[in-house]
Length: 343
Image 1 (cartoon, one colour):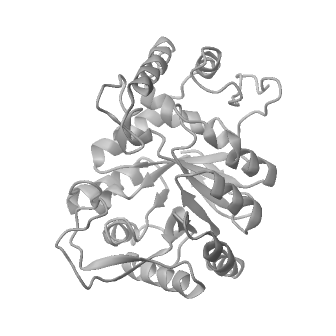
Image 2 (cartoon, rainbow, N blue to C red):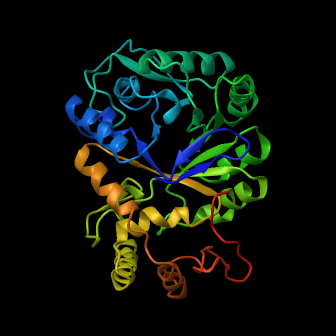
Image 3 (tube, rainbow, N blue to C red):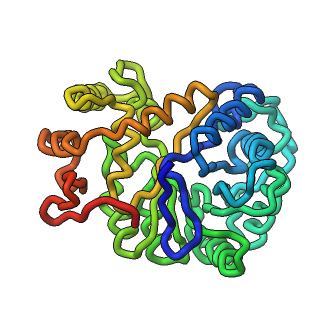
């Protein structure tokens, strides 16, 4: 599987990444056997980038991912985790976690973007995974914590990176505006952009993607199915968009995009995976994968390589923004644009 490098670092990501939130029992239980088999299937398919976080299943995702990778050659894969939510004893457990994960709640999350909180969080993650180091560390959803995240957490991560303890640092969020600030105002190398550069939402073109290009930094795209609306060949009523029921007008637009994909011999989910990678600032698309069947499907979709004319037609029909960059197959961009490729 092709790899793309985070500039000015030694970190290279396979174009497709394994998002480990779902093996932390996101929304429903995933058995230990399914989680292990999914990770083995991903490895066999050539996926070498794996993303997790303490938040995912109150540490369950990190434990399962670490167990699967522990005996793999350490120099052959990249693992990222996140800081900002410490896991601490829950003084008032109710039995089940209340933040979307089907796990017991003996622990709770505590926001902490201080230097000491960052160091403790990394140490705890290494303990749960059983690994000797992390390749990428992101600040996790610092929306309400800009000052401490920028003034304390990022300098702490930068010091670890500069010492060679971490390969690259950044932030992961559902918004693009603050991610842009991290790229422009801090030592971040890479940001994880959730849902803001997809076939249905190209708002990342307003700020974070141009900033990444200008500064020679990188974007990892997640949430490319926008919570499910782009995950099927034919979108249906009742599907989710950004964690809520999709508005009818978005369902109609997704169906129109699906029609164009079909006319070009591809599918809506294959195009949804491929689309972010057409932007020169995006180096990876990471997808949640719960079991071997999901892994195999996502890998096959990634390998479809929709034709370049698809992007032209979507743009000419007003189904994606007119300023969306794309390659025309000869390496020449449309006027005012740059050709996609590895940054």
